[in-house]
Image: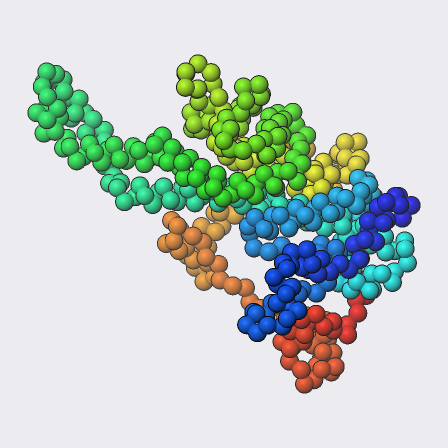
Length: 458
């Protein structure tokens, strides 16, 4: 409690204040005509839905995220801003274990508002601070997951859409080497002849058309169609939520090699509020391109002006490249996110004295310090496991190969485990207290806001 400033303690107590936001909004938005209808009690006026119950800011923080969409992103961002306003010290819980911190979070998560208020000041402030600390980590992880899903869906849906369009027109041409030889031989024998007289008798016109379509479906033309299919949904829909997510996330890296992607993200944040009417970055900006823009995207990202003299970087295409690179580096831990849990700084996963006691920790983990030995051992284990699977799969009734997707491996469900002793005791106690009430009715009562007479001992 001593480490929390007076302002922070005031903000924490404000989380427990119940505010009827509906009444305030209703008072501001109700028009004069609507008030007249209410006063006169005229018939025919449609009944309005019952106003929502007053809630506290803590209740708002406890709410789970809804379906994927812009509204969900805005709600999670609002929660994150509310927690940032508390002003919690950056090193408040650095000496507290994750298990202890999670127990504090769970205690606040299940307690009612009046129960939280009854705690003495030191306990109340400590529990609220721990809950907000862990809740911020959860929200940041949720936003990162949402950003990764958006990038993944953009690319996969675009590829499927383009592949579906190409499959209708593609006819695989076999024996391309033989066709090329026959074509070259015919052209050399009659170099002055016309195409219809020399080429088409050897290789038909339809075969050549099929070759062109096949190349377009697998070469640069395919990539161009995928890029176009990604650009449309991103600029019209997904781009409304991506800047909001980036504004509330701080990506960092412990390696200088990956600083270009960090600089690219800062550039994207700088242009968040700039309308897309400005299709290119200004010439004064330093736009990182290496290790961010793939070779297949370079022609659509870096273009030239109408005069053909100055290079300019297209904002939409560059943002797509940055997001794809960001996803790869976050998944490989090359980038980490501040205030996150699952996407936290990988250095935090190591003991503080790891450098001085490296040999001791490796010995405890039974792992070699030589990376080549570790890789060879891992490869050997994988090879042995695959050989064992290959030898036993014909006679294994619990494993089978499916024709789906080129050979998916299907595993039969595991046998049910015996019921836990504590679960049986819980069922017996519920049956003793409410012998005539169905469990579904208990769930509905709890969902409607009527607390069950069960207290938490967390």
